[in-house]
Image (cartoon, rainbow, N blue to C red; front, side, top):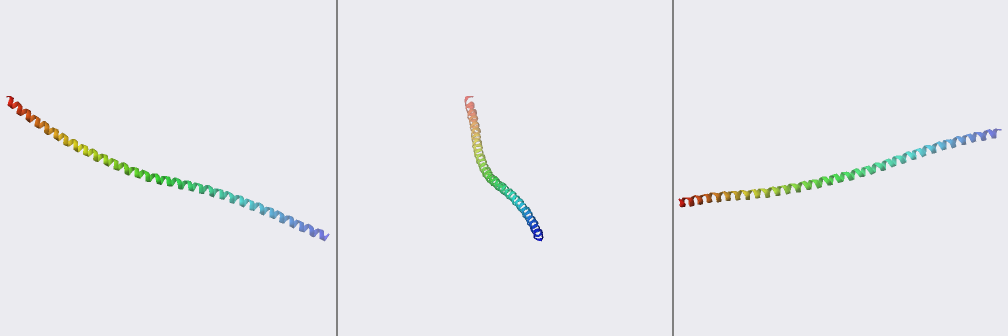
Amino acid sequence: EMLRSHCQEKELELQEKEELLQSEKKVKESIVAEMQKVKEALLGREGELLDLRRQNQEITENKATQGETIVALEAKFQEERRAQELSLGQLEQRRSQLENDVIRLRQEKGEADGHIQ
Protein backbone atom coordinates (compact mmCIF):
# COMPACT_ATOMS: atom_id res chain seq x y z
CA GLU A 1 0.00 0.00 0.00
CA MET A 2 2.79 2.35 0.91
CA LEU A 3 4.55 1.53 -2.33
CA ARG A 4 1.40 2.22 -4.30
CA SER A 5 0.94 5.54 -2.53
CA HIS A 6 4.57 6.42 -3.18
CA CYS A 7 4.17 5.49 -6.88
CA GLN A 8 1.03 7.63 -7.18
CA GLU A 9 2.88 10.56 -5.62
CA LYS A 10 5.75 10.13 -8.03
CA GLU A 11 3.28 9.82 -10.91
CA LEU A 12 1.57 13.07 -9.86
CA GLU A 13 4.96 14.82 -9.56
CA LEU A 14 5.90 13.52 -12.97
CA GLN A 15 2.59 14.69 -14.43
CA GLU A 16 3.03 18.14 -12.86
CA LYS A 17 6.56 18.35 -14.25
CA GLU A 18 5.30 17.35 -17.70
CA GLU A 19 2.59 20.04 -17.52
CA LEU A 20 5.21 22.55 -16.39
CA LEU A 21 7.48 21.54 -19.27
CA GLN A 22 4.57 21.83 -21.73
CA SER A 23 3.77 25.27 -20.33
CA GLU A 24 7.43 26.35 -20.64
CA LYS A 25 7.52 24.98 -24.19
CA LYS A 26 4.45 27.07 -25.13
CA VAL A 27 6.02 30.18 -23.57
CA LYS A 28 9.25 29.58 -25.51
CA GLU A 29 7.30 29.07 -28.76
CA SER A 30 5.42 32.28 -28.09
CA ILE A 31 8.69 34.13 -27.48
CA VAL A 32 10.18 32.69 -30.69
CA ALA A 33 7.08 33.74 -32.66
CA GLU A 34 7.27 37.25 -31.17
CA MET A 35 10.99 37.47 -31.99
CA GLN A 36 10.21 36.42 -35.58
CA LYS A 37 7.61 39.21 -35.84
CA VAL A 38 10.13 41.74 -34.50
CA LYS A 39 12.76 40.47 -36.94
CA GLU A 40 10.35 40.82 -39.89
CA ALA A 41 9.37 44.31 -38.73
CA LEU A 42 13.05 45.28 -38.52
CA LEU A 43 13.69 43.94 -42.01
CA GLY A 44 10.71 45.95 -43.26
CA ARG A 45 12.05 49.08 -41.59
CA GLU A 46 15.49 48.42 -43.06
CA GLY A 47 13.90 48.21 -46.51
CA GLU A 48 12.07 51.49 -45.90
CA LEU A 49 15.30 53.11 -44.72
CA LEU A 50 17.16 51.96 -47.84
CA ASP A 51 14.32 53.29 -50.00
CA LEU A 52 14.40 56.65 -48.20
CA ARG A 53 18.19 56.82 -48.62
CA ARG A 54 17.78 56.11 -52.35
CA GLN A 55 15.09 58.82 -52.66
CA ASN A 56 17.30 61.26 -50.75
CA GLN A 57 20.21 60.48 -53.09
CA GLU A 58 17.98 61.09 -56.13
CA ILE A 59 16.79 64.41 -54.67
CA THR A 60 20.39 65.44 -53.98
CA GLU A 61 21.42 64.51 -57.52
CA ASN A 62 18.39 66.35 -58.97
CA LYS A 63 19.27 69.46 -56.96
CA ALA A 64 22.83 69.31 -58.29
CA THR A 65 21.58 68.85 -61.86
CA GLN A 66 19.09 71.70 -61.43
CA GLY A 67 21.87 73.89 -60.06
CA GLU A 68 24.04 73.10 -63.09
CA THR A 69 21.09 73.78 -65.40
CA ILE A 70 20.41 77.13 -63.72
CA VAL A 71 24.08 78.12 -64.05
CA ALA A 72 24.07 77.10 -67.72
CA LEU A 73 20.83 79.02 -68.38
CA GLU A 74 22.17 82.11 -66.62
CA ALA A 75 25.35 81.95 -68.72
CA LYS A 76 23.29 81.57 -71.91
CA PHE A 77 21.07 84.49 -70.87
CA GLN A 78 24.13 86.69 -70.25
CA GLU A 79 25.58 85.67 -73.61
CA GLU A 80 22.33 86.50 -75.42
CA ARG A 81 22.09 89.80 -73.57
CA ARG A 82 25.63 90.71 -74.64
CA ALA A 83 24.78 89.78 -78.24
CA GLN A 84 21.63 91.93 -78.09
CA GLU A 85 23.59 94.81 -76.59
CA LEU A 86 26.12 94.43 -79.39
CA SER A 87 23.31 94.39 -81.98
CA LEU A 88 21.77 97.41 -80.30
CA GLY A 89 25.12 99.19 -80.48
CA GLN A 90 25.44 98.34 -84.16
CA LEU A 91 21.88 99.54 -84.80
CA GLU A 92 22.64 102.77 -82.95
CA GLN A 93 25.75 103.24 -85.09
CA ARG A 94 23.78 102.56 -88.30
CA ARG A 95 21.02 105.02 -87.27
CA SER A 96 23.61 107.68 -86.56
CA GLN A 97 25.23 107.01 -89.95
CA LEU A 98 21.83 107.24 -91.70
CA GLU A 99 21.05 110.51 -89.92
CA ASN A 100 24.37 111.89 -91.11
CA ASP A 101 23.55 110.70 -94.64
CA VAL A 102 20.14 112.43 -94.47
CA ILE A 103 21.75 115.69 -93.31
CA ARG A 104 24.37 115.47 -96.07
CA LEU A 105 21.71 114.72 -98.71
CA ARG A 106 19.60 117.67 -97.53
CA GLN A 107 22.64 119.91 -97.75
CA GLU A 108 23.42 118.64 -101.23
CA LYS A 109 19.78 119.14 -102.25
CA GLY A 110 19.85 122.64 -100.78
CA GLU A 111 23.04 123.42 -102.71
CA ALA A 112 21.53 121.95 -105.89
CA ASP A 113 18.33 123.98 -105.37
CA GLY A 114 20.48 127.08 -104.85
CA HIS A 115 22.31 126.48 -108.13
CA ILE A 116 19.04 125.97 -110.02
CA GLN A 117 17.57 129.34 -108.94
